[in-house]
Structure formats: C-alpha cells, structure tokens
Length: 82
Image 1: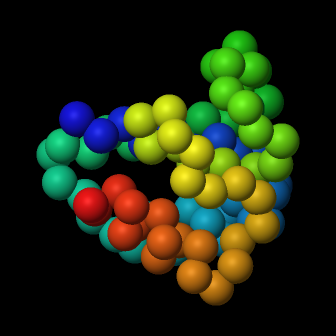
Image 2: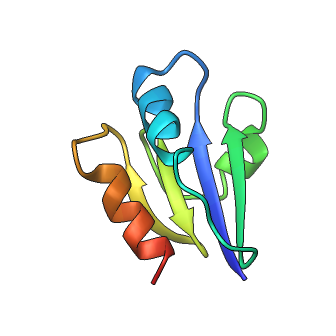
C-alpha cells in the first residue's frame, strides 16, 4: 500500500493550486491519500520534516514542498504511479 500524506493550510494559494491539480488524477486501490490541515493537527505535522506547504510525502519520503511550479504535480503523480 502506498501512503500519501499532503500537508496544507487553509487559505494558502499554493495549497489550493496543488490540490486542484492533484484532484484531477485518480489512483488505484493501492494508494491511500490523507490530506492534513496542519493548523488542526499540529501533532501529526510535527512528526514530519518540512517548513513550507503544500508538502507531500509518499511512504514518509518527501516528494514536494512549497511553491507549486508548472510541472510540480505531474512529477508527484509520476512518482506515486511508479
């Protein structure tokens, strides 16, 4: 099972852009996706090493952190689908 954790904050324009693009993709039943609002669940966020949102981890490996560039989401999707 591939576990994806996405850390975000409400009102963050980069988080919204990331989620809007990310949500256009579908994944198989072997992918579990958890979206974590770090302001509501700081105890979970503190366990991970990152400074900027959005941040995405795949099985505890950081795949993306911070500003969303043109190909950011596509790179993450490619890694998840490997």
